[in-house]
Each structure stands twice: as structure tokens, then as C-alpha cells.
Image (cartoon, rainbow, N blue to C red; front, side, top):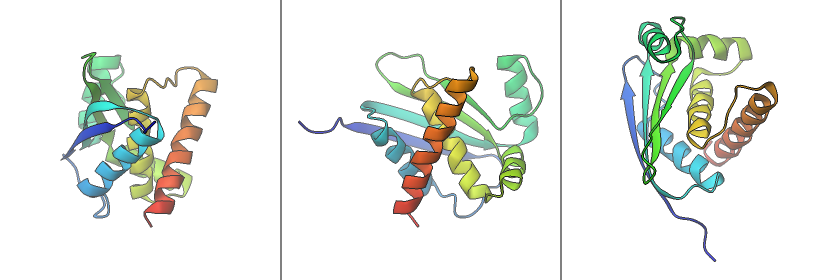
Length: 150
């Protein structure tokens, strides 16, 4: 029996600057890698927008009632025949997180792309134990992908 087949279209929108190494090809490769690692199948579309604090604050307020900037917000598609969603990542907040963690901004952005994808794959992080499991899974996938793509 062969592995499930996944076909994904990735759209990258840069509304704020990102490091040069964060190319559309690398993001697409990371998205594909994650979906295969998670056993996803069928057609997928993922739009990833890199935004500033003002835009993420507006989205956060509009959809979650909190105007403060956050690092990522994920919007799953509601079509049962088509998987995917939109992911908004705030680059300035990600840069602050990267600095606190001692990581590069490009690695932090990859970590956040995976966070959004795992949400699209129905991972939940509202309970501490679930959040810890989700973050651990993100790290495993990122480390494995980075090991293959250095």
C-alpha cells in the first residue's frame, strides 16, 4: 500500500520584509514536508501572509476580540472537500520571540508556519498539555526538515 497523496498549493504574501532565506520555494517545501509527515492527503491550499503589528492587531481584534499584536493567527477553510487555510504571521513579534529564544528570525518563521499548519490539521493549543504536545511536534518536524535542508 502506498502513502497517501497530498497536493498543496502554497501562496506567500509578503506585506512586510522577511529574511532573504525565507523564499517561497523553502516555505512550500516546509509545508509539503509537514503535510506528508502528518499523513495529510488530498488537495490543500495554504496562504501565508507575513504582516506587521498593525495588521495582526486588527485581525486579532476582529476575530478574537483582542487588539494586541500576536505572533500568528490561523483561519482554517470550512470546505469539507478542500483542506487548508490562511495563516497570518507577524514578523516583528516573531523577531522578538526569536531574540528571546536565541533563534534566527528565519527559524522562528518556519516554526510559526508549522504552528499554523498544525492548527489546520486540527491540533489545538488552548489547554496547556495540548499546547506542549503541539509545540513539541512543531520542533520535531522543523528539526527533521532543517536536517534535510541545510
